[in-house]
Length: 586
Image 1 (cartoon, rainbow, N blue to C red):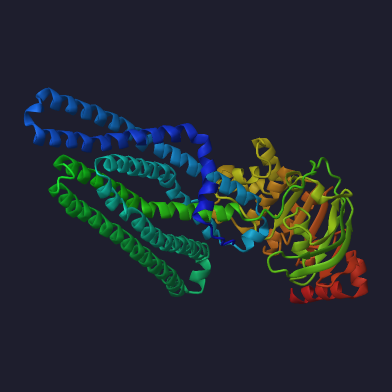
Image 2 (cartoon, rainbow, N blue to C red):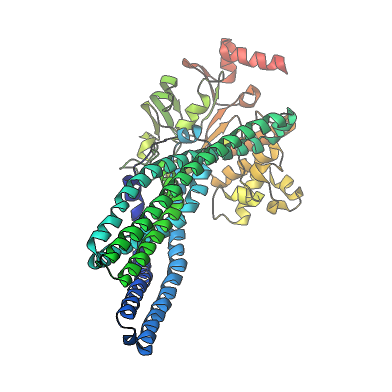
C-alpha cells in the first residue's frame, strides 16, 4: 500500500473542501464561538472597572451600577449558554456528517481499485482506515476550526486590550507566546509521528486477528493455538510500546506548556508588581492583567488538550488520503461506450501480460480466437497463466501489450460496468455474502423478483436442497457461507450467474474442490449454464472437459497444443500425458 506522508498544509488543503456542503453550519458555529469568547473577555473589564473605581472612590459605586453590571453579565452568560448548546449539538453533527462523507468517498474509491491493490494490502489495514481512523474526524472537524478561531480571537483581543492598558508589560508577556509555539510545534511533530505508527500498528493488529479468526479451523487442526497467541502477543506488545512512546511525547508536550504557564504568571506577578509600585499601572489594571492572562493560559490549555485529538484527526485524514490517492489502474476510457447485446466473439491479439506490482511476466505475444457460443477449455500446469488469461477479459487486469477484442472491438472501448455485466464467472473458491440464500442468489441481478430467483435456482439444480433447508430461501448461510457444503455453495453461485444471464461464461476450476457426488450435480448445472453461451473453462479434472468444442494447453511458453479431446489424445503430447496421469491417480 502507498505509505506517502503529507505535510500539514497538504492535509488541510485536501480536507477543507469537505466543509463546503456545511458552510452555513460552520459559519454559525464560528459565530457562536465568537459570542462565547466575548462573554469570557468582558468579565476582566468589569472586574477592572469595579476594582479601580472602588480604590479611587468607593462611594461612586452604587447598587444600580453593580446591578447593571450584574444584569449585563447575566445576559452575556445566557447568550453564552445558547451559543454553547448550538456548538455542542450542531457542531458535532456537522463533524459526523463530514466523517460520513469521507467514509463514503473512501468506500466508493475502494470499489474502483484493481486486484493489484487488494493483492498487496491487508484487509485489516483497509478496515482500520475507513472505520477507526475516521472516528476522530468528527471531533476534529468540529473542534479544529472552533478551537483555533476562539484562540485567535482571545489572543488578538487580549493583546489589544492589555496593550492599551500597559504596552511594556504586554510585550513582556506575549514574548513567551512565539517561543512556546516553536517548542510545542517541534514536540507536536513527534506526537504526530507516534500517532501515525500507532494507527499503522492497530491496522496490523486487526489484520492478524482477522487472519487468525477466519483460519480458526486450520489453527485447531494443527493445534497451533499457542503459536497464534504468541504472534498476537508480539503484535499487541508492539502496539503497547508505540502507545508508551506516544504518551511520553504527550507528557513532554503538556509539561512544556505547564512550564510556560508558570513563566507567564510569574512575569505578571513580578513585572506587574514592580510597575504597580512605580505607579505605572493601577491595581485594577493588574487584576485585569491577571484575569486576561488566566484566560489566555486557559485557551492555550484547551489547545493543548485538543492537541492529542488534533493529532489523531490529522493522522486519520492522512490515512484516508492514502486510500484516496491509491491509483485507479483500471478505468473507463474517455470514449468508452455501453456494450449492448454482445455475440460473444473473443480474440486475444498479440497479448502480453506482466503483473504491475512485481513485473512477473505471465505470457508474451499470445494469440487466441474464441467464436460466439464456442465451449473452450484451458488446461496446463499451475502457474501457466490460465486464470490470468480469463481475468484479462473482464479487465480485472489490463494487458501489458497487444489487445483483447469482443465482437471485434477492443474491450477497453466498452464501459467496465457493461463489459462485466456481460460476463458470468463461477470460481472454485465460492464467495457467499453473510445473509440468506435468497439474498445471495439475488446478488446476480438486483431487483429480480422471487419467481425469477427460484427459476434460476431450479436451473442450477439448487432448488431442491434449498427447500430442504430449515428456512428454505430465507436460511442464513453464515459468514462466507460456512453453514453450507461446498457443493451447495457452488450451486448457489451458479444460480447467481443464471439469474445474471450473461452471454459469456468463465468457469474457473468450478468443480475441482468437490467430492464425486457434488461434482456430478454441479457439472450438470454448469452444462445447462453454458448452453448457447461462449464458455471458457479452466479445469484440473480433465474428465469434465471432454465434451468441449476445443481444448487449449497453456504453459509459460504460451498455447502449446490445441484441438478436441480426441485430437489431442491422438497427438500423445502434453494433454495426453495430463490425462493419462489423472486416470492413473484415480
